[in-house]
Length: 362
Image 1 (spheres, one colour):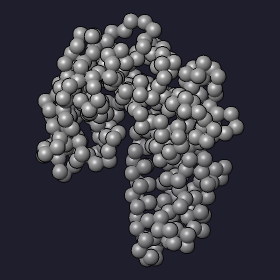
Image 2 (cartoon, rainbow, N blue to C red):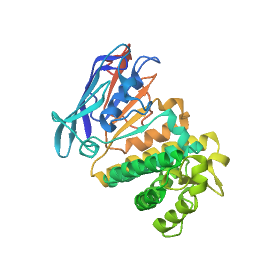
Image 3 (cartoon, rainbow, N blue to C red):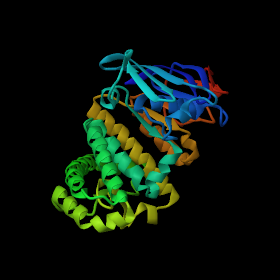
Image 4 (cartoon, helix red, strand yellow):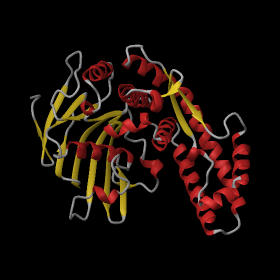
């Protein structure tokens, strides 16, 4: 899978931007605040219908603008697909081959990407919301119906929380529904981690020169029990507590992805270097996993890896990518963003003021 062409109009500071990436490696380089990350964000948004920098899609529209549009031509084993997302005050409108997509499921999956960016260090630092999101992303790659489960769970959770805050009766009805859907979300995450966890461990061993072997586990307040029955019991027992707090205190939205190196968790006992290696290992494992379950390589997006990785880890990343056959697009302040051990087909673009100029590998 690869993106053959990208255009952006009114997206952040990208006005009339056109990009024809290389088949193997593309480097977007230049000074800060010129549009390198905005270009990567446009590609990610085209793929995922969300930004990795903001929850408000309106923020993606250029200052004083009314609308933005990102379009791309994606090549995969199924052929060539034209994808397009428009954003205005009403939200986003995704199209595939000119047809408006009414459901997320019909759009997502046509163009798969994996992103590594400086914010991913929070994965290693113990941000459990990000870790749950990571597991959900991995689960979606192998089982697109997981997106439906998540959206159902979030809707029911929102209804239950609203009822808790209002003080009205009828919570028991929502307990049943939340336990049913919550059990399916929990079980899907556990199944995914059983398969992705060993991939993370193997890649991290490579990045640490076999000095470190992390272990990953999924932990909840009802591990080892029948999940649906245990969650339903906890929800019922916690009525008074939840009413007092105004939110639901049990369920998959509170579960934890725990990472240990040795006897301790990495966020409490790991060094900054170990945490940087782990965050990269998690994303490279997602890349490998996506290729395994999807039948072709996702596009790998790297936002300024040199800001988080020291020269040794950058070199190891280069070795990993040397064996990777998929498309890689990386931003950096330098044209030689990632040191590959062997020559690689590469296109480089200097980014200035939201415009891209092919540099010819300077």
